[in-house]
Image (cartoon, rainbow, N blue to C red; front, side, top):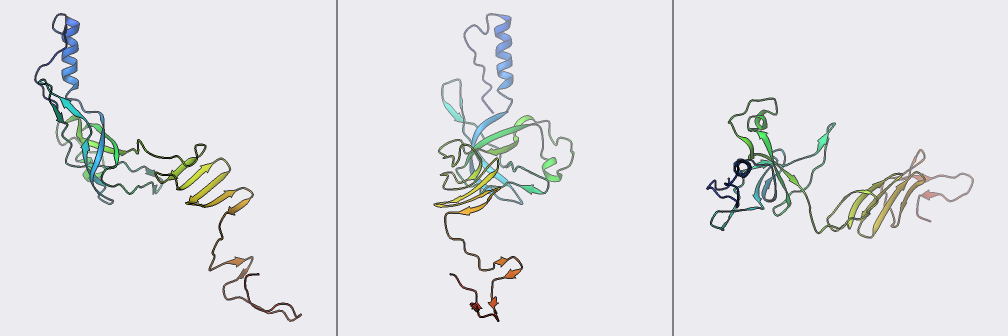
Length: 217
């Protein structure tokens, strides 16, 4: 936590309001809330815990800058519900935010049931969660759609009213009410046309038409 050595702005000791402002500021220095952070290491699910570096430096009374100490490890936010979840391949260097809980959550993280606080900690990053956030240097593949994509936008799933577009490099597959279109050939080793499985199908025409295994035109 920040060094509690007294420091004050000019005028804070000359009035009641100034003194109250100083007291409130000193109190808030011991209250964690939310700060930018970076992944140092990540233990993926089922553990889902990360070691992080808090990207903030505390200015001491002598003017020196000290890094804000990070907790040993914190859970990583994984959005989900209804038996489904959205996961990302978290790796060292990824940016995000560390968000503190109101109370000690250590017992809850062991049982995932309602538990009392194991300590009297309040608003502390020790009970925080890491929220991944790309923040910068990303290219949106389609500004009019909701997208799940790579940072450079070259691979994406873009969803907008009435359409879904799947993009992988120069290959684009578009799905709309009218049908499915692809700008590249589609390979289908197993294909059923109506009720006929074309894999291994031999056309037998007693009326003298083309016969034999199915083939491309």
